Length: 264
Image 1 (cartoon, rainbow, N blue to C red):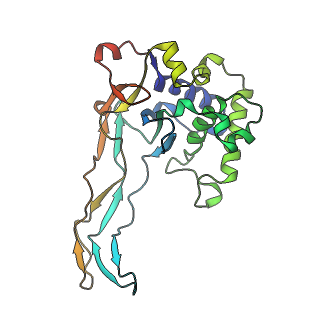
Image 2 (image 1 turned 45 degrees about the horizontal axis):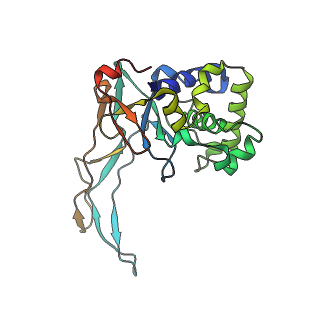
Image 3 (image 1 turned 90 degrees about the horizontal axis):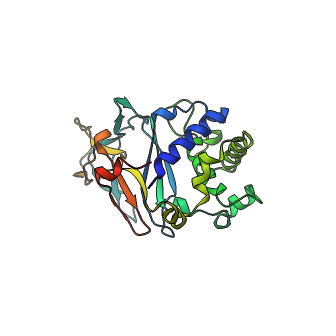
């Protein structure tokens, strides 16, 4: 049995320890979890989730007449908030999520950008690039996601080149190959070698920004006001919300506690 998220955690700790530009990251307060993402399906491969984003400015949704632009109705006023994640009694400022098995099946050949940046490299470097990419999003201030040159696009050319430089810096430091060996294999190869691939997940949906109605609604000119039609969200998560799941090419399912204790 291979615990993929534990392998990722060990690798991330090694990267952070060897690459000074990522030294501001406290690996012990970085939650790594897996989520289902089938190979070939749409969706992100990995994501950096910031849990220190401040409450948003008050706002509302509105509906306009397509011809005149006149506002016909609006929702109630609300703010967007970030849920708290408390692991081991300590708040977690950032989380990294990885879509399995999609993450495992990355190849340089499938990404023109990575193929150019890492010309002549082995295919598994595409996965290391993804890991470092998400780590690079962690802002040194700890209050948000890194943005290049104050722009509105995270993935500027400068950002992507910076990631590649950090990947090279890590490999030049001559890390122990055993730390990143699991990246060499796609998902089917991992299953063939280890029988079962598991990872830490959230028991339900993972923490996401949620909307909260303002208790005191601003007075405004008469408009039709509609309720905020959004599903309720959790405001806090703890260790009790984590679970170990077994991943396959078609889905994932909870691992019995007896088997979970043996996962390594």
